[in-house]
Length: 259
Ligand code: ADP
Image 1 (cartoon, rainbow, N blue to C red):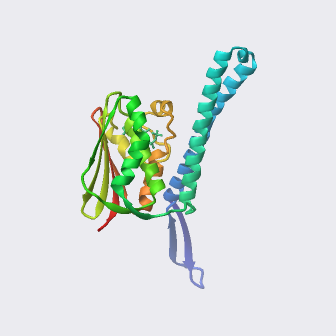
Image 2 (cartoon, protein in one colour):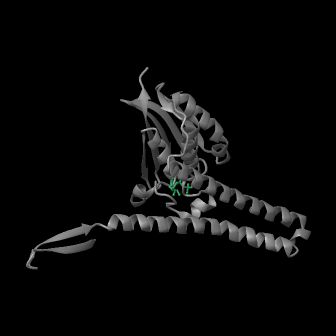
């Protein structure tokens, strides 16, 4: 809190009153801290792959290149790390476009069931690799005004999280239904779950419950924050409930179109 005071004086120079201006700097400071933290996070996220790429490239130049098998392995690592940086930069650019209203939206009347089907189709190989079952229950035919590419992006993120954070042989339930004015997409897994104290932070940029696990899985820690921005742009809501070692439930509410 910044406090400025000024005294009112009459013509005799006697004090008649005071003006006190109180300026709440805590909000400003909070924003400042958030910005600093964000820059620190971005730098750290970029530094890790750069260090890896540098050391692998140096080892190759120092002679490892002679060994074909080793070379292929190292180049594969380098390639993956570049992919990670690429994902990170794309995510950051998208967030920045959304932040200053440069993201172009294309909303159209969309059959939510069809949309969800398409996204499941794209991601199901990842579930198959982990012998997970995706159970689909399309209860209601619901329509909403949706930017299909962006909503597909949200769904792919939520599905890939469900797959990533659920052990082999797990189960993922996907449901589409109508709840009053809302078209609801529910994605429920029986994976590792999220501790209660972390849930309020999940939509913060770079927030991860388990940093090592997320990085290992190739995550940027930006997926859910982008998902929330996109759902917000649809005037919708995204809600996460979870219980540790039981599973996680993500619900996306979109204003439905009555047919
Ligand atoms: P990431 O790229 O790390 O997956 P996200 O923004 O998509 O980033 O998710 C943020 C964090 O939320 C993840 O790091 C993970 O800890 C947690 N999380 C998200 N979805 C799930 C889920 N289905 N089960 C358990 N934890 C999850």
